[in-house]
Image (cartoon, rainbow, N blue to C red; front, side):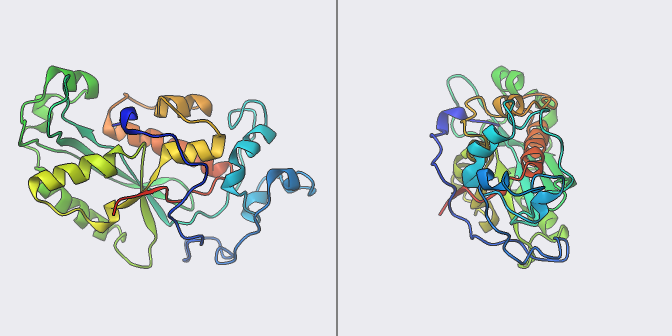
Length: 286
């Protein structure tokens, strides 16, 4: 669930991540070698460097994202650019795409409680979805959903009644993470959200209210809005709708459906990766 009202304008550069490539057999054989960073104006002077598959051998500095967008065609990353056969290795083996839906009303109720908890496991080499964790969550402080909440999210009362409460869901998430090999120290993974609200405010706030601990893997993430602004050069004020429009992508499913929003995030990430963008951590909570 996007919360534009908690967003601030993006910083001009990405931060908070080690400048290294992920390693492992699932990556390209040469992924342990740092590819040269070349700005787009130099790439254009090298014969054949923009041919399909070229980005397997050189990395486009994300700092040149807006320039890259202008150089690659007046329509940005849309249909004017032919798909690439390969793209640069990402710094993470897996991206964990997450988007909460929560209880809400006008005026806002307090505390808000998570009522939909979806995660998509996105392979960092193929940018394809490998696994899904998805459950609805029964709220306990305000167990009755408001008409406003149902209209916004499409979630009805029967959907959350009888579902696990948040403490049980967090245990199941940890079990799923272990089953998927994501707790292995040699596996690099990071959560991805559309905005900072989910992991900076919503989950920590509800856990504090209920006396629950927040697992360390929830404390650093990629804000897709920031990543998109680094790559394209514009801030997506309307979140997923602006990002899909900016890259000529069809919006998937229903807005403010957690699982559908996750699918849109994954699709946008895949498109950016195929255009040469390297994702880095943008946000963290201490």
